[in-house]
Image (cartoon, rainbow, N blue to C red):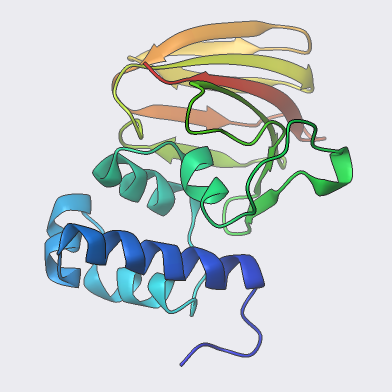
Length: 190
């Protein structure tokens, strides 16, 4: 039974995660083996008893061959050609201090999307794999500083700097700026 206090987005996300698992015909145990996430954590996320972290969603996206934006868009309404700022879906990983705004929700026929990311001071996001191998990312820092590690190389980005990379392995996003960081992420599926 879902908690009455569960965030509506977490509830829709939990339902979608359960649908994806069922569509693949996997038990919680099979999904746990494929994703490296415990059965209990998967079960709690599907029942919206916990808000999934960015790292957890990234692991599930890798198993399902989706970007995080694709997964999150599946629990939102069909994207319109123009999305007013106030209607852009926002998702928050409270545990890590990461806030993600889907500026241009993905469309099944398009490969690119824009995402605004915000990290609080001290936030440290580590992804053990890309959601889709070979994913192209452009990271443009709008305000603050951001340290990005990819393929064993750390990049220190200041306001106005832009990093372009293809993601094949683990990545890490760290905010050491006292005021946090705000950046634009352009994602292009291979």
